[in-house]
Length: 88
Image (cartoon, rainbow, N blue to C red; front, top):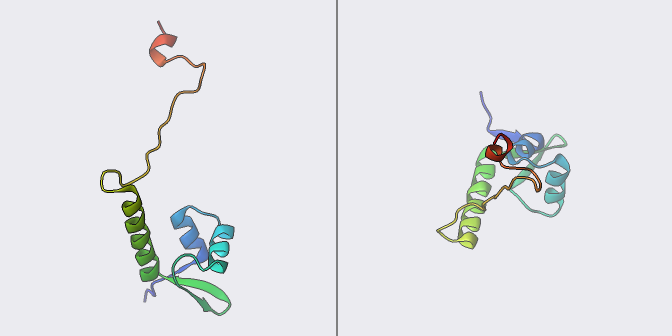
């Protein structure tokens, strides 16, 4: 039987944040609803999914409809030649 709960470590890995960050958010009352089970913090999967959905809607409102995700632009390091120039 699968009980749909997640540990702090599972949620931290899912969101790519440290366990320390998760615990700070817990103290600051940021994030999904959590429950204490035998001295361990657990999150219901549905609460995690709902929080992710709300966060996505929040960012969509801030960024507008045209840009859904912040863009990351990468540039080659300064001083390095373009690949075509290296072999010419």
